[in-house]
Length: 126
Image (cartoon, rainbow, N blue to C red; front, side, top):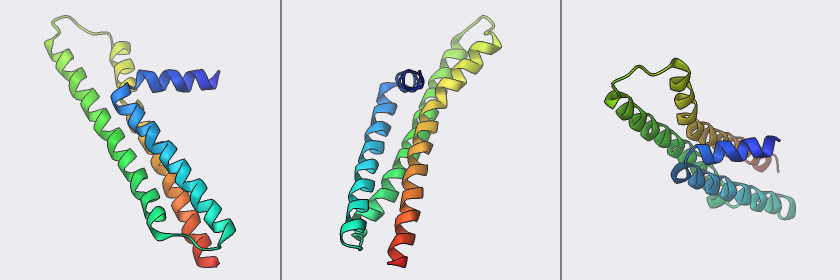
C-alpha cells in the first residue's frame, strides 16, 4: 500500500523533476554502500566520495526547490488566465503537488547529510 502511494507521488510530481532526484538518491545510496564497505574493510574513507555524497544531496535539494518553483510558476500562470472562480480544495491540491519535488529533494538531502555526519564521526574515531 505505501509503495504504491510513494510511486503515485513520484509520478504525480512530474518526471522531469522527480526522476533526476530519484537518480541522485540511488547514486547517494551507492556511495553510502561504497563508503561503508571502505570503512569496514580498510578503516579509512576516501575524501572525494565523502564530499560527493554531501554535494549530491545539496543538488537534490536545489533541484527539488527548482521543480517546485517551476510548478508554482506554471500554476499561477494558469490561474491568472482563468476567468471563473477556482474552488479552494483545487488550489490546495495543486499546491500539494507542487511541493512533492521539494519534499523528495529534502529527503534525499537529509539522507546524504546524515550519512556524511556519521561517516565523518566514524573517520575521526578510527
